[in-house]
Image 1 (cartoon, rainbow, N blue to C red):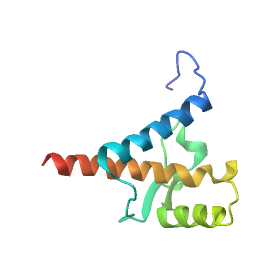
Image 2 (cartoon, rainbow, N blue to C red):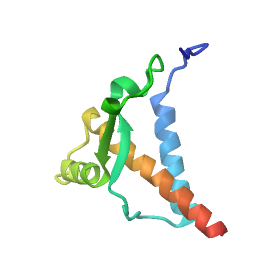
Image 3 (cartoon, one colour):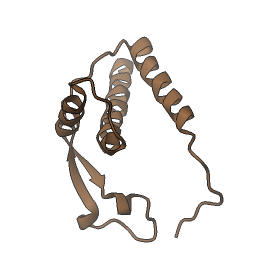
Image 4 (cartoon, helix red, strand yellow):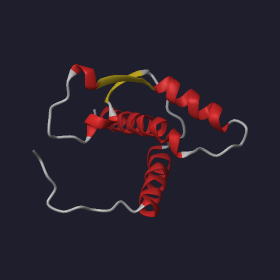
Length: 112
């Protein structure tokens, strides 16, 4: 079992600043304002398995998500000017992951 030597706290104000700074850097440094979702499906682990290192993931723990659904859900949830709730966090995380993938692929292409 892997066990952390100490616990750490995630400061949400700091996290918010980091995300805003990173998105600003992607826009300013790379000139990216929109990303085409050329992939729809992604692999993920169910929440109860994702951070449990007492056992290895099994096929039953591996799930398929859809970026298009995540984007559509967030778009429709905010189309009337409403704010997101904590329940929509699970739809934002995969889109940020895809942005990371996209940016790293773009940087690699630009270096080639």
